Length: 290
Image (cartoon, rainbow, N blue to C red):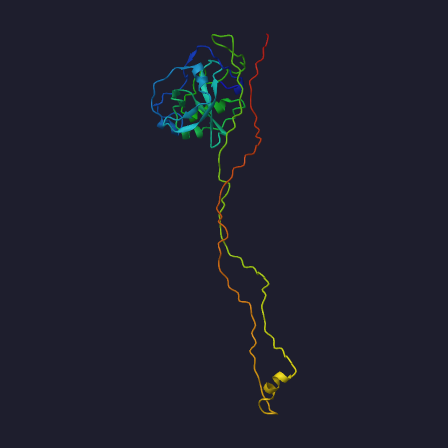
């Protein structure tokens, strides 16, 4: 029966000078095996990977064989029977919230990145396996089939033989305990738009203005000796009319546009603290005495 994974977190992480290779892989140019992606793979010379080198890849960017970025390598998983690096858990997606398993066969460093022998779409389309749970035989076979790898050899693959939960350490009496660390990043998104728009409103303005108005006033004065001649000139009894023009002021309204101020749009940055929370896993090591 093909081997099945126990809990992923309990896999040993051997840091001794053991050299490992991918076991149980189909030839890349073997027809009629695997999935639709197999035809895209090109034959490559098998590369020997050192265990310590594989663990140094954690946190690096993973790129596909076409140099397209896939995600960040979160963890390396060893075969509990052979101690070989078999799978890498890669954080994919826009914010690294998705995880996909990719085989480490033929993986190699590419500068500061790690290049795997598969295309980005093949990795992101891989079956969704819960990294916190136990990988069943059917799930493991599904991953092998997706990547076009041979799953027919019961002694190959990643995991334990059924009923075997003994951690083995090759060439050393120590094992590495790992913990997940929370990495919090920031991304900028468009929240909204602000426009300056000018429009006209009409309001009524009242203002008091002083105006002058002429009024007719009758003035009477007695006739004195000095003015008797002026007063008695003309007919003794007659009708007469005298006209006076009266003037008055009235308000005149005139409007004109007067610039009052200039308005421009600026931006200020406010910094506030937001709290984020996430679950992280850590490995615990227990000593069992027989």
